[in-house]
Length: 245
Image (tube, rainbow, N blue to C red; front, side):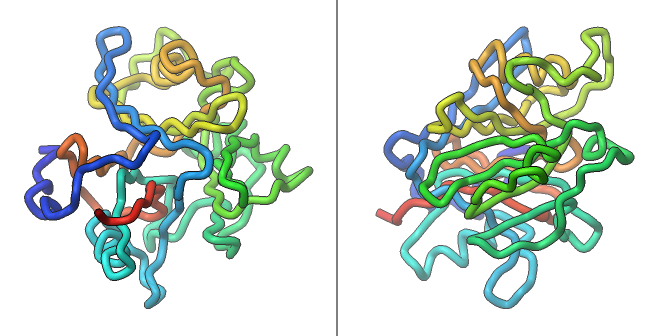
């Protein structure tokens, strides 16, 4: 059950940070959960702890934040990873890089070009940049995670998404507003095709740039919704951090 880990995390306060929220939403009879962060809030990527080991779970990230007087407002898996949970493609955390940018086509969803990079700039606003554009003119990113495919590209759906597709999975992704001031994280609570998932970002949320994060490992931690998904250990995680109250 998706909320079955909640008892393990009940001590975490569920008060959301100002300007951030998680909510349930329905689009074309499909259930989604949506969490938002605003530019300037403390949105971070997490991969390894101080010991160099991959966190792998929301509980380990919370445990690392607690001595600093911090907590997760929400968190989500943030990109595909290898068997050792190292990121597939480019990953940057607080300015340090692990992995390399992949710009060639390849197998699986990641290699379904165009793919892209979710970037958190040093000033705290957001961008999703197509990977080859990123390679040609690398932006300054304090945090960055590469994934694929792109879901929405300048208001257009990925050209390989078919409305008649029957391949439906639980999926998660991120969209960024045109002004870079909002990052919107979405997880489907019902199996959904790529085409409908992308249309939810564009038509349901008004996002003209959106990036797929995963569909094999799609999990959300949202205390305000009393939700803590569980499963196999994760690689990169994106989370909104706030002071404990």
